[in-house]
Image 1 (cartoon, helix red, strand yellow):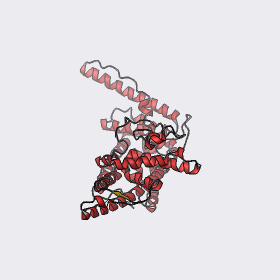
Image 2: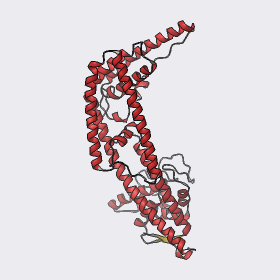
Image 3: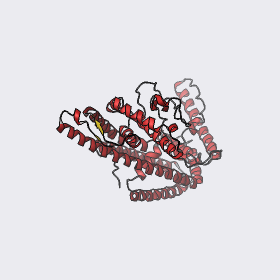
Image 4: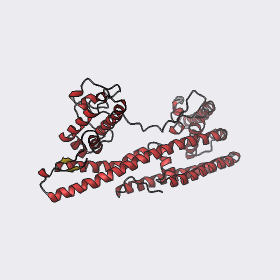
Length: 417
């Protein structure tokens, strides 16, 4: 199907010609961006899973050394000659080891070390309380005990599926936090297909989908939050008519052939998702494939609204990609440190990552015998602060560059190769 002007309604041929070219240019660009975004998600999610598995194996290999390091740090936490920033950085280090490197793989040792550290902190707080009471002659009530949730709540998606001493199953599921919500277009699948389909719900769950804050009969758009141009277009009579005709044709109970029935069920899911997300081109494509493949003549205002809707979606593509890539700390690490557009670039970055893991293990082997006094500890704490500052600066610079790329109409193309 090709969208063309209804020449009988066109007022200015030159203007309609420009609008037709605008539509063709935008539709080509949007299709290219969609294909690129789909490829990115597949490559990126696979890289995230690979990263998680590799980090789990790496943490297991360092488990004994990390336990020994944590024990040393807990002993240092009881020293009185530490500045406030020393204690804050030391607390971050201990929690990082316990929550990220020890507890997910040995919760017995994690609980023992947690309890030991709590005792040190409690003793330190008691000493501070007594000092304040003596200095200011006041009575300070005792704080409540730390809750276990303060510790266990911090285990992140990198350790999803990691074996511990508990009965936790290991699986190869994709990174968490990016599941799509169930679709909802303001009615059931039977309602979408029109009154002729009432009472013919499919065997699946199409006919009763969970509500997501929308009331029947309203045009409330969730998910990708389309702009006004999309809302106006989706509420137009001609597109609503196309949607209903496509839904009627795709209703699975009308198909006796089992293989074709499954194909129509998948197409119906895509149609409903397109209705939910304001994806006009997908609705038109499904209509063309299943109902009528002949050219469709549109009025000037309808084609202009469609162009505006495509521009809205193009503007959202980069934001969707950023949301997918920066969903949590591990995904951000993968995107900024390991991902590249080309397979060769990803292989090169992975080799650099493996070298970094080897360096970390070597540095830990070097640190353990040296960490015997406060001078060495304070030096290591200073190094950690410097690294944190550098990482934050790099992240801020990366986000600025990403926004600049988007603003300069680079779209979702990644700058690295």
